[in-house]
Image 1 (cartoon, rainbow, N blue to C red):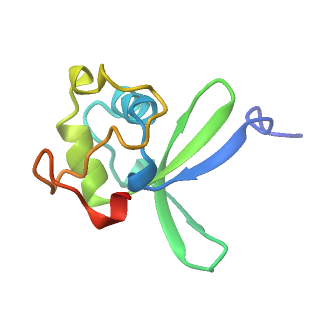
Image 2 (image 1 turned 45 degrees about the horizontal axis):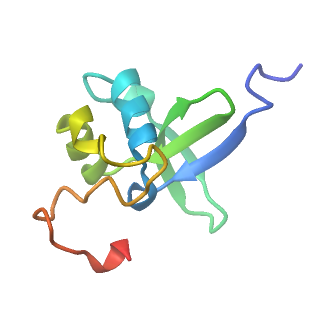
Length: 108
């Protein structure tokens, strides 16, 4: 018997590719943050262990890689910060270690 979510597309998302839509889903699902019980561990194609938290849309299951930047961004989330961006814009979510307006070589 197939799991009920077997039809969903599965996407692994790194912080650098986090969109306002996925961030909003994370904050909605984990309003007080996530803990070890919410973290899924798996091996990627390079046989490295990856830890992620899961959020699901109507057609996609996202595994968002766990990081300090993700935690900080979720803690500081304010929906109004993203109102000028499209829901799928990966450049909308800014690295929390950067000052506003500063650029990071990893974001290009």
